[in-house]
Length: 213
Ligand SMILES: Nc1ncnc2c1ncn2[C@@H]1O[C@H](COP(=O)(O)OP(=O)(O)OP(=O)(O)O)[C@@H](O)[C@H]1O
Ligand SMILES: O=C(O)c1ccc[n+]([C@@H]2O[C@H](COP(=O)([O-])O)[C@@H](O)[C@H]2O)c1
Image (cartoon, rainbow, N blue to C red; front, side):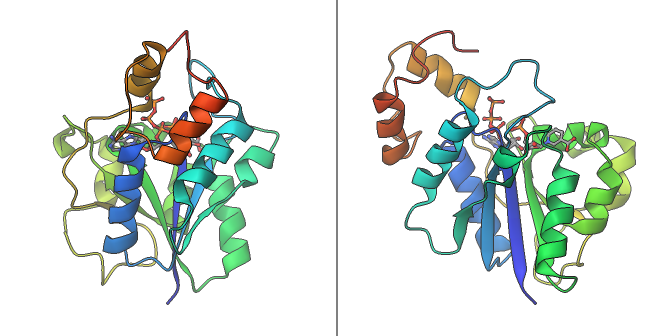
């Protein structure tokens, strides 16, 4: 059965933790294809992104260059409306057919917010969710509504076609785009935390020079 992974994010900018979690996602879910999908309009954020949607997409394209099976999907950038994940998964399900296994990758902080997402139960009818926990994540704090979906198993191979939430086996990585925007605005060296080609793009386009938030 074909297995396709979906990793949506604001990616302002895409950073080393994103890449590490995507690598673990690809390997542990044995994905044939991984789609990184920058959110054109992340409606749920108090502050809009600093880089434009086109710039965030360009950085994603640079970050995944040379990685077989990884592709940048621009559907949410082209969508002139809020980036609802459920719509993205519905589109993908229609394109890929009923027999493809869909996996959605999110961070542990996003998981805690999942019950506030648009039609979130529908998301779990369409896909399984793999979670990359962040430092401080504690499954005991999961919202009660998520508990029926939560599976504490390290093995992804015999998975259901949809409807489960599982944690990746991956040590928490203490890195965020917010931290990087602050470092970049302060002129700090971020090599090792951002892919070299993305760093070049940031420098060339004079991104994140000030007003880090
Ligand atoms: N270090 C990390 N560990 C686990 N998940 C992460 C990590 N960084 C980002 N994620 C997850 O990746 C997805 C996309 O992340 P996003 O683009 O918002 O990056 P971010 O670092 O959380 O950004 P920001 O600091 O701007 O909120 C989200 O589901 C987020 O939870
Ligand atoms: O669909 C929703 O209602 C929804 C609400 C909050 C976040 N998301 C998605 O979750 C992903 C991670 O969001 P963020 O802000 O951490 O980059 C990104 O793809 C968002 O579009 C989706």
